[in-house]
Image (cartoon, rainbow, N blue to C red; front, top):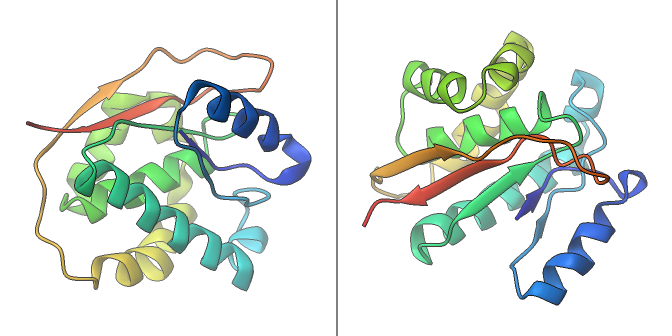
Length: 159
């Protein structure tokens, strides 16, 4: 489970639940999807570290991955887009897959988040030598819970 939420959004509650169930939890503690938030140095570091951990879990360990933020429209969509690009998809194909997975996330990602991901995240995570990986994309049913787990995206390596 990848949580792209800040401490005030009570991400820690999900950590405790995941630990109780023996589920790996990756926290990417960013406060929001605005340009002001995304351009903070600590946010860039959190995103890069979270993307690397998530990529390693999906590809190296062949684990399933659930990515969410508070509303499932901005942070999780941008994070998922960056993972898809790291997995070897072109910009156009990553956007198509995001739209197939969750149209609301595709509509909510906005051009500035794509431009930010392409300028600040993709070059840093793609420059690390990896070969394109074949993956299947399955969208889990999106629903809101008390923890606002709205955008649930599953990335699973093809066997």
